[in-house]
Image 1 (cartoon, rainbow, N blue to C red):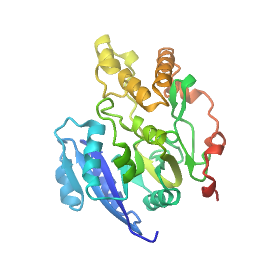
Image 2 (cartoon, rainbow, N blue to C red):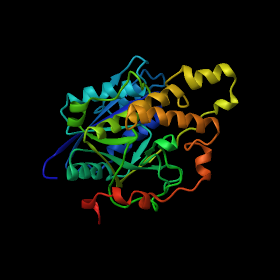
Image 3 (tube, one colour):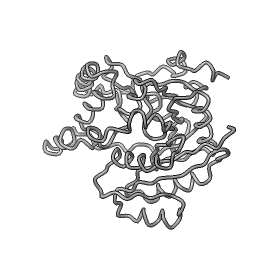
Image 4 (cartoon, one colour):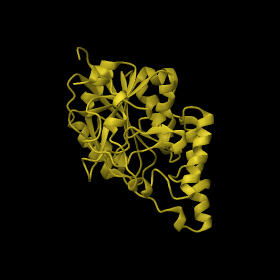
Length: 312
């Protein structure tokens, strides 16, 4: 890179002080040749001392404090607006439970600069199983019931060069600032806790490429497995499945993410109905059932998605 690239990292945080400090320590050790990095933390009123600890240990980090009602999408949007005032070339939208390989950010920037007008996601790997790929390259098929998140892929079953995808999850994505200025940030009205579900699909529909760079390795905390609604009483089951849209199992959350993040509202509606039927029959492609059915290697399934210029 012949010029210095300005990257603004936006990280929503809430009551995970140890993880947040670990994340910032890791980012301080990144190889940043040719990159000027500024970090924006959005804390949604943590009560575990996160803000105080960040300000004491990382005075260079910009800390924005919420009032406890932002959730993921609102916090991300506030951080994006603050970061854009700095006029960065790119926004690094990420979670605080990430540990980057020391050259990961350089790889993301290099790929974004090489292909232009694209969002670049890192290769997400699990902390406890660092060979296992995590939430990378979801694929939409209406007849499957919407997005399929692969459960059995490893570093040996994926393409070895950058490839195009249909969605990039919000754990780690490098977004051109102009893409946000032109097409808007995340939808916090309908998706308060998973705005990434419609963000990158919307950008893709408007002509922005979505690319995964496998050389940019990012290690993530495994998702916590929530208690199954089938083991709850009816009152709690209603709250989980319908009442609180911010919760993982919530069907309204799923409905809006499909309606807004699918190829179009009609296919989104059809996919939601199919998902609901599969869920009721315990054949959900995101649950334990998904671990019992075979998955083709992504390197074969996505052969046509590998970007020719990126082949070794």
